[in-house]
Length: 263
Image 1 (cartoon, rainbow, N blue to C red):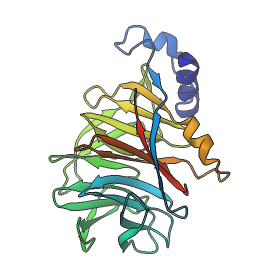
Image 2: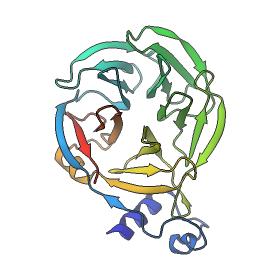
Image 3: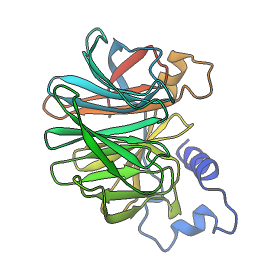
Image 4: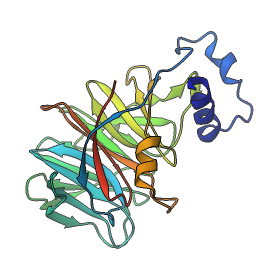
């Protein structure tokens, strides 16, 4: 099962072209020969707005913060966990497609897909505090007290300054020695990066120092439970409650948010 999943990820996300076959590429590198694949245990289920095109998710100050996409419908929200009630919301300009969101100090920073504009919000009130510019596309965003990490759909994650969004360093993400692209929503968990892989039912755990995928999280049972038919209703959204050590996942247009535990 493990080699099959790794082969599928490699085929879907990094077309072979002139690349060396994965098994050969793994030889001579320090990539693990078999990356662990784990199936999460569902701890709890919570209501989720089935109209929310979820692009970013985080846990802050006792509530979920969620950013949603699609032009004319993009928002940043504070959401109560137990019943999914929207406690506060801020609208992103109608021409922009909202993407990932992360905490930067006492503020939130949210991305837009192809506008190169990031919005800064007060984390408690969602009052707009200004904008910043960046180059390339905006997909996922996460961070800690000193840095933000941005994905742009490629196999490269960008570690950026939280005040300017200027690149500090790049992380080339690989799986068994080959580039892994379509990295979407991001979340820092205990010093590693969890990332949704767009249009797949998988999360990958990435070592931020080496860029290597060290674990694959198989969300297929959760996706099957949701039973969505829209091809864009993909798994997307990861939030980590570090204090209570709770991990949450959801997806675009999903009616449910899941608390999960990893083996």
